[in-house]
Length: 161
Image (tube, rainbow, N blue to C red):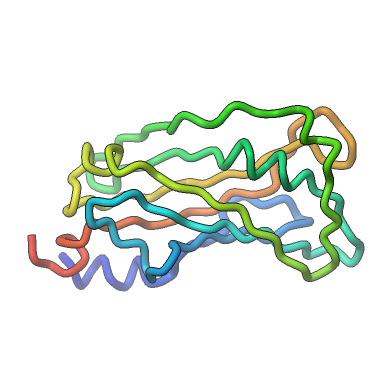
């Protein structure tokens, strides 16, 4: 089983639903691929402007609220939407100009308790990570993008289970 998983998880993330103005990817901090060993999974989301013009992004609003995360158990097909942080509308006026080709990052994490419930060190989970925010001074939320991040328990990855 470990051999089948290793080829699937070498690509840390892939964009699955994207605003055409942005490219969004996610990767685990300090590990490639994401290996769950009983501790919280910390990851970074990179948002790159693929337009030819600058984009004003409410970056602090996005960082404060964090990403929207849905966990998908690849073995049982169960899904779980993780609770998100409260949003602070006051941060919408604080925008960051993202130049063409420039990337900014947003941190995220998944508490170990969620992964423990789905196999712990034998887990095989895909985290669907979505960023959305009001853009261009609007109050309407728009998708910035969605990406997938594969998380495999350390025993499932190494085949020691």
